[in-house]
Image (cartoon, rainbow, N blue to C red; front, side, top):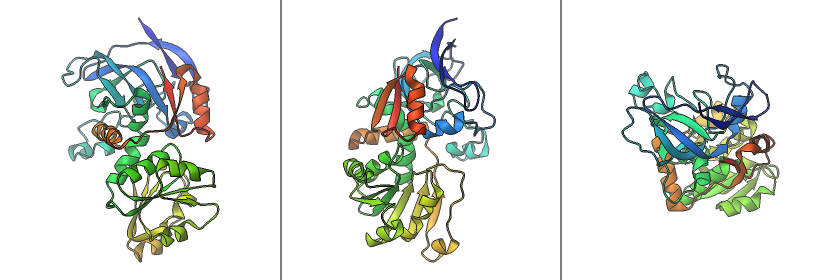
Length: 337
């Protein structure tokens, strides 16, 4: 049988190693993709550390992959070989559970995530169901398209589903893999954009990304700074830090919304009084379906929003992963094949 190169992790906390694995043909309703690029996401750390108890070890990680369809399974009618596609965090759904029957595909109880449901994109080849495929517009390279499958769609989708309208004050907490895209989307959507991060060093990046204002959370009270700007209609919390997220609530204006996309298991330090008196609300937001990813990429082409990527070849996956673990990535590591 033919083989291809893929990164594998044998057990929680084990090293990332490059292995030869069997190349299989896609089953019905699936395609095989020649991977060209794959983003390195912070959630990969959770997967590879053992946070998902039913994970199928060994794991090939990666859920921000972009590549070309090279083989079709039976019963695939809507895609052809040669098409460029992205597969993101949304890796397929069952179409049978109650959430799916309500059209809530992101809440599918049997939802598939690449690397957990099937081998992911840290590889030369991978197989995915057609439900997971998002077509890449011609203006985006593979390295630009890959991060849109998770970091891009998560932040874009979160912002466009709020009640904020052009001209409203919108703040993005955290300038990292998610936040640096959130700031760009907010500016492109016409919001008065505030970037919030730790330290003065991120201020220049915030300006380049399009922020109108920068708040250094180590130098000033975040809530007071937001209120001085008029109070935020929306705070998009991309930083995985519950204490920092809680500090933004007092900066929301009347009926303002805190949207949380930064994943952490720590409880949020929010008082009911912080919410009730001003009518504020807190929501969590998942990523987005394959169609959401397509719309994210289309808006990226229209607006010029792009992930700031650091490209490395597949055989340097361990180094790219370490850069994310240690907070050195600026701001999205991408493996290229």
